[in-house]
Image 1 (tube, rainbow, N blue to C red):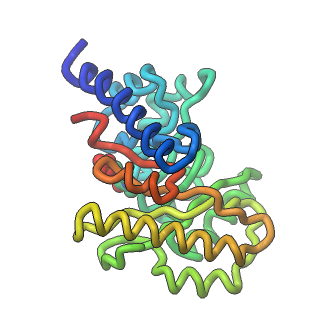
Image 2 (spheres, rainbow, N blue to C red; image 1 turned 90 degrees about the horizontal axis):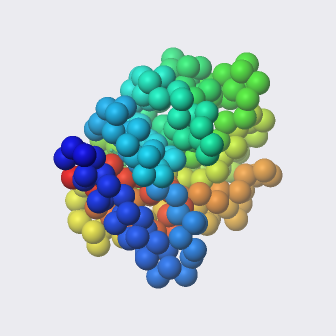
Image 3 (cartoon, protein in one colour; image 1 turned 90 degrees about the vertical axis):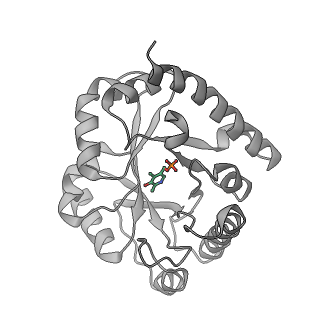
Amino acid sequence: MNEAAKRIADNVPRIRERIARAAESAGRPPESVTMVAVTKYVGADLVRLLAQTGCRHFGESRPQELWQKESELRDLSTMDPPIYWHLIGHLQRNKVVRTLPLVHRIHSVDSLRLIEAIEDSAAALEMQVTILLEVNISGDPSKHGWAPDALLREWETWRDHPHLTVSGLMAMAGAVGGRPQAAREFEQLRQLRDQLARNAPPRVSLTELSMGMSGDYDLAIAAGATLVRIGSALFE
Ligand SMILES: *Cc1c(COP(=O)(O)O)cnc(C)c1O
């Protein structure tokens, strides 16, 4: 086994264990948290190794990179159980059509214009698409996502999109304030989700919270994360 393979073989069970412990301390079953292995740092060969250790959910932040890896690993999408791709980074409208058929979830839907584009393409492709709404919970101007106030306002007039299922919210903790600040931001995202869920349009249930990365997934799970997006901790 080479070095990278050894690291993956060590890291995956350790991270799974930590996820399970965080879920249990929060009074939730370990299966209530899905680990999305973020593979933007590595090539298809290491994704294949991760799949061999039992990982089934993979995240990429660039659509082109997702297309590329999906095509190199098409055989894994047809195995039983299959692997699932998640887009976790910004999606430009001209890349929607090509991306939709390949992904299980889009975590990073950050505007009404993008929602309209996804709805139109999903209708044309005759498919149902599950999305999460990205919230800029830290207020960092360099980050994508709705400001919480803006999303609350949009929600008042939220229009049904028959080919979309809005399953929850996604956010990243800001760069400042360390773990204590990250914990507060995750709590804020959960509260925002609860508030939106109470006034949700029909067919919208917002059961998912995609939050937590390598340095803070335990905190995110404590605050209610159902999807954690873990990259560097898998490979270091
Ligand atoms: C890269 C990335 C991650 C993974 O970050 P790590 O700190 O390497 O675990 C998670 N979410 C998004 C949106 C990312 O771009």
